[in-house]
Image (cartoon, rainbow, N blue to C red):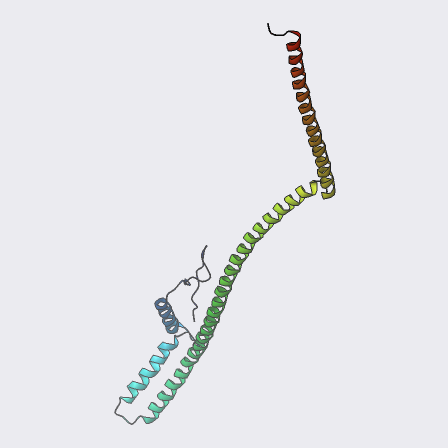
Length: 211
């Protein structure tokens, strides 16, 4: 039997429809032609033509009115023998067809399995893309945390900072005490100056009485 040839082209996908060189009708015509022209004997005469001749000879013999039972039996045996000879390649052809059908079924199962794995692979790719995006976000957070950690590490220790704060507080307290003392001294100087002015005014009144 002539097997259909699959015509593959660029860009053909596994899950797409198969393309064959011959359609079903063309396959039937080719098979019929091969059955009509195929030779199974060394004489080279097509088996279907030989079978037709045997049957025609038997049919014509049976239509005769003469006592020809022996000839009819002989021609019938010859026809049956030729029929068995013709049937043998048909059996072989059927075996090939059955094998091709089983092969096609196996191919379809394999094709379905491949398509299923393709879908699974696509789903895995999508999951990996999501994981990649999540990893990028996580990495960005880690980098930000590392930057903050370096900034913190660059700062002086807490003990030194607290010591500096204590020293600043002492300086502030000393400045506040000095400011208070200065304020008191200034207030005292204001009082002394006012008293001095009062004394001066009193002395001037006694030296120069009013006339």
